[in-house]
Image 1 (cartoon, rainbow, N blue to C red):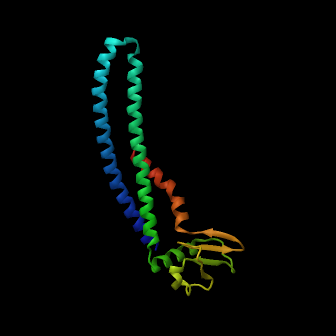
Image 2 (cartoon, rainbow, N blue to C red; image 1 turned 180 degrees about the horizontal axis):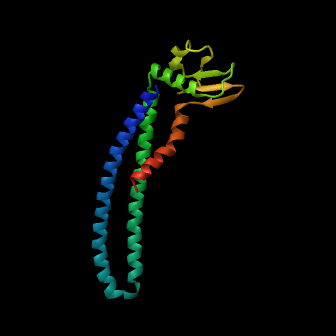
Image 3 (cartoon, rainbow, N blue to C red; image 1 turned 135 degrees about the horizontal axis):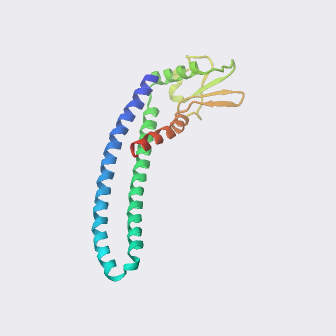
Length: 182
């Protein structure tokens, strides 16, 4: 399961790298277009300002440059957010469609990693994985569990849901994507 999950994550990273490359290339093209437009506008404005308002020329040019820079930053920010959202959506979709065998491997792997185990804890799984009930005596189906699993012991829950894992990994993904845009 972990290797499948790692394969999925690896594929998503490869896809993300390709998308980042394409998006970066497109952002650079857009920035060049904006730069060319800016330079053309700048030339015209400079001539007009020089003739009419010599004293206000510097302030006007700085305002225009700031506006273009802000537009470029906004385009880049939107691109980053879009890429993060697309990647998270694809990961969520892949995890929502894992097989019973992959879920079994995920469950066993995470149970083996735990340092604390209690005799009367319950392992709650989604209805669609009810075929795993025979795996351990303390596995139960719970309609509130939508994906992954939850370990419950005396009102305390350990959340191994995919949504929780995705939230946890989102920051890592944002850092990786940020490095590509630097």
